[in-house]
Image (cartoon, rainbow, N blue to C red; front, side, top):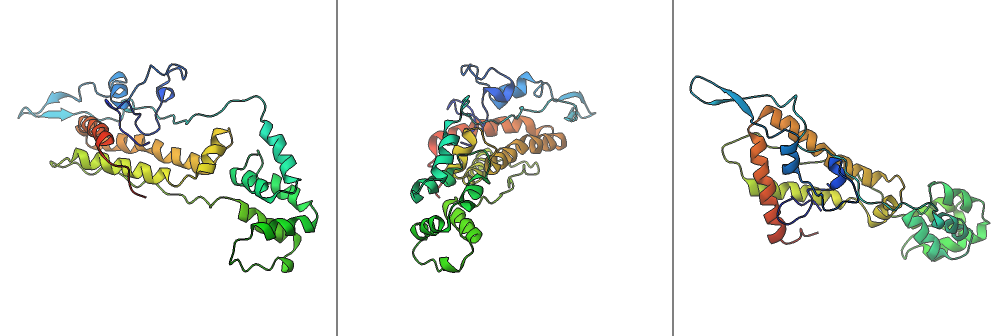
Length: 264
């Protein structure tokens, strides 16, 4: 998922043809960061003048185009009629606890308050019956001592997937040094992307792909989009590093072919 591009033909992080303003339907027009850096002028000669000793004087990156355009969009279904939303209303008024649990788990409705409002309007015996079926072994909740609204909240918490915990992007370009370890940088970036991916539940990916706003996925994409800003700031301070990171990208593609999946 967080693979570098290269001969492996795997996109860099979540980039797709849309990332560079290309038609989404033309999958053959795949463009990768190294190509984008060349086409945007980012890899035009990084220096134009020399000092008295003949060493190049690097120009500032501030006025140049970013190395790649970030518009990260995993695929979504585009349907004119969300038939499952009609089914959601039926399920929330029915009597099958397991089906209702799956519905709430994947949140197949546009308003997160929908199950709450419907369940609050149901009679107490139905909600109590749902709770007794879904309470895990060892749960010490005394259902009879809860109010109707408290039972509904308890029921929704049992049906919902685990709460999303934000994880800020942890990798930053290191200060330039003579010992530039391409493999270590590529591996560290890939591992950070993988750790970000693990914060998003499968249910949230489904929810997002159906066209609903999903905080965990949007946070995941935001953290990856910040990579462009981090690199631009780094290249502004160390202009000669832009070329080095093209080598990082190539090494990352080789690691993607050779390395084992990161252990959980």
